[in-house]
Length: 430
Image (cartoon, rainbow, N blue to C red; front, top):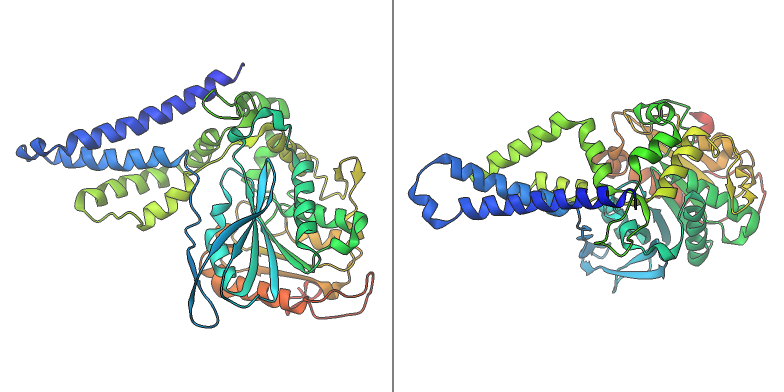
């Protein structure tokens, strides 16, 4: 019960600020106030509207907002999001497009569990949907999972990926974005040993910390500075009485958000000040650039304490994946056992979260894979989010990923060293 009070205090503070915003907007928008032509009331109403929306979004899971997709036939088709595998800590969902031909590429998009919902990849999903049969990992908010469901750490995460890959079958292309890259690589290696026939056709790792020490960043430096005891003492709390996961130890989303914002506090302050001014001038809209960004950015989810702590300790501090020492369910996962799954890495030249060098380290770990099945790409001028969203992704990276999947649409004989083209950005030539 030690940390339950602080969890409830954070929620009460958030709720109070949402109420203050709503109250200010209601008071300053009252018709009688218009009899006093003072710009203060216009500012107060605008402040209240922005404040209420801001604090409300912190506890709301965003909608995917992908209702239609334009396909090769030139027609708009409805998108039906279906749950195909349901588990306590995360589901496998399928973006079904009724009325169109089955696409030749079946893709599993592994979303990060790093404080935000899978909807953070909304633009990535929308860009892949016209050409792929798309499946996405939809992780659950830990506060909503009863403590009776047990733990969830990096090993459980890896086993979930193994289950999802087995369900989809060997004709699948896997794309992992950011945080899950090392665990997706480990899950593929696990299948290579335990169930070779279930391995995917290809694996694309985008901006993931395979070897965090390859190129240190502020994130890796933080992981080195703090001890596990300090992290557990300052970051971990128990879910309060309001949610189904009452009593579960978590790294709260609201606490994560405070650290996100503190890293760029001046920029965020300027953004909200500007939005209040736009509200005052009547220039703000429900789906303007500010609201589109912050509706997603502010929507945070709790992570289980064991997942957060094991990620920091085993992936960043101990570098178990980077050293090929990762263990899942008592079994040492040897990444060198991957022999017939094409692997591609994508990095952003200006990525300050997972810097260039961290992700491409995966190719050196795949000692059993011929160079013809390895590929890499570094996107000039792209930051972390740019390599899976925005113009850099749409114009440059996505076509390379599609090309890579097309080039590896069939699986060669196991352990075959026969050369075949992976894509034009072959790692051996880079």
